[in-house]
Length: 254
Image 1 (cartoon, rainbow, N blue to C red):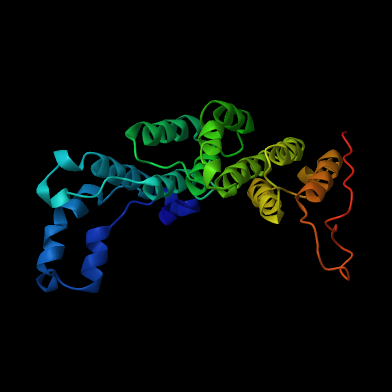
Image 2 (spheres, rainbow, N blue to C red):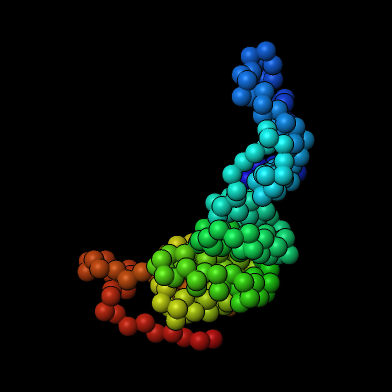
């Protein structure tokens, strides 16, 4: 999955070459020779294609060669494939493929839609906030809500995925509305939520000139509101830079 970031995304795997650089074929153990069928399966593929190939192999383990038997994929497996698909939040939008991956995971049975997986799925939407919100309403949101019996952590991580998409799309107005929705759902937006938005924005701003950054006055105003919503209450009385638990919040809607 880490090989799907930036320029490495289109690079083909050279597994045999890497093995040869470390040791000669005569030094391979029996277990490694047994893995040759697996190596040949993904050698020469891009990291993203290899990720989906391995996932398919795990899904169909009982129908493949005895040398390719593997455990069934779980939530972590799908989370890693989604991370590869999103380039860890850096790739172009892949909404359709992400939604199909999510639905395949849910239809498989036994896959828990935990917060890390949902966060990774949402990051696959890149800067396509409209598609991400549509997926939230129909698929991802209900799956996140179903995990609230285990606490709000899963729901919060899923919401943070939306925050990242808002940053990629340069939409702090929608991010602020999401922060309000989090409060309504009983999930406190935190600095982590704000940092997810900022991380997405940094990706969106890469390569932009100073002239293209002008005219962001209204954007900055919404970001100030978002910062207020996502700033934790502070229990240290000597630190006046953050709100205390008894302080009131004022919301200004532009």
